Image (cartoon, rainbow, N blue to C red):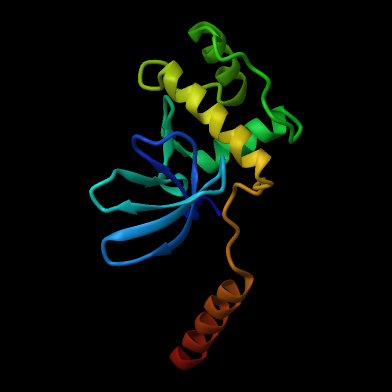
Amino acid sequence: MLKKILSVSGRSGLFKLISKGKNIFIVESMIDGKRIPVYTKDKVVSLGDISIYTDKEEVPLAKVLTAIKQKENGAQIVFSSTIKPEELRTYFAEVLPDFDKERVYPSDIKKMMNWYNLLIQNDLTDFEEKEDLAEKEDTVEDENVENTENK
């Protein structure tokens, strides 16, 4: 689900991917529903490709958003736009205790909190990618065929 949700540099909010062509994406704003063109020269990042630094490894954004959802019981995060950096770090430490405090900036945390609220507002609450059941069954069938051929 997060693969089709985009962040576009220079534009606030998030965008749903509607269509893509050779040098252009058509996206829909999750704030006001307006559709706009985004060109290949613009920096576009899929939320499914974002990871958060921790002391040991990088954690996919989907897992972080799921942890926030569990902490907030599926509700939006209530916070002031003037929240202090220390408060942001304290909140985020409750969600992801071993996040890298040097490489994850307060502005990054605030952006994730805003993204989470925007996704919840748009009823996009299943952050973790689920493996397609049919695809999984095909893989099992292929393995079974290979095993019988090798005998």
